[in-house]
Image (cartoon, rainbow, N blue to C red; front, side, top):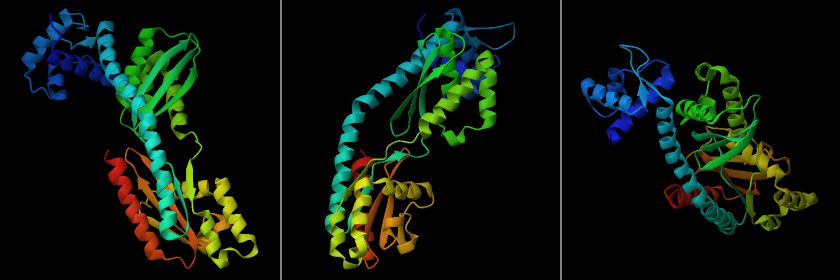
Length: 342
C-alpha cells in the first residue's frame, strides 16, 4: 500500500496531536487539525490504511489511534530529514555570508569616518530574542548527549549533556519529537514554567533530561560571545583641539584599540528594546567614561531573525548632528537593502 502525501499529513497530525494531549486521536480531531478539508469518513478510511500499514494502532475499541514505534520512526525520519537538510544548507551558506557581512561592516565604518570626519564603530550582529528552529539530541556515548540548537539568524550552538542512565535510540528520538513539537518557533523568554511542566509530564521517567536540555538551550543562547567591533577614523579625534587636551586623545584612542568600553556601549544600546532608532549621548550622558567630553550618536540596525547590531559615531560635542544623523539613516537603509532582503 502506498504512503501518499495525504496519508503522510494525517500521520503527522496524529503524532503531533498525541504528543500534545497524550490521548488517542480520532478522525474528527484530525479533520480540525489539518488543512486537507476531508470528511471524517475519508479520514477514518485513511487511518484504517495507516493502521494496516503498522504506523498507528487503536489501543481499545471505540478509541482513537496512537502512533506505533514504526509511526514515530516515520515521523522523526521525515521531520529530521527536512530539518537537517535545512541545517546543511545553513552550514554551506553561513561562512560565505559571514565573510560578506564582515567586509560590508568594515566598509561601513570606513565610509562613515570619511563622510563625517569623526571616529566610527560598527558592531557585528548579535543574537537578540531569537526563535528556536531546531533542537537535536544525539548520543555521544553511554553517558552523554550532544544537544544541537539552531536559532533564527542561522546560529548553531552545541553543548554536551551528561545523563545518569543510558538511553536507547528510540527514547532519544521520542525526546527529539517532544522537544521540537513544543518548542520550535519560541524564544527562550516565551518558554514558561507551565510549558516546561507539561513537557516533563509527557517525558515521564525522562523528565529530568528534559529539564537539563532546556537549561542547556538557555545557556547556549545566552552565553556571552566575543563581540566583534569594527572601528575607523580614530585619528580624526586629533582634528578637534578640545579632545586633544590633557591626554584626552590618547585615552580615546586607547578605547578604540582595546574595544572593551565599546562593548559596554553596544550592550547598553541593544539592551534598551525601545531604542530602535537613533540615540544621542552628550557629554556626561555617555555610557563610556573616556568619552564624557564627546558626543556619541548610535543607531541599532536589524538584519532580521533577531540579529541586531550597533553603529556609533563619536566626535566633539559641537559635531554636525544633522550630517551625522543623515549618514546613519543612509547606512541603515543600505544595510537593509543589501543584507536583510538577500
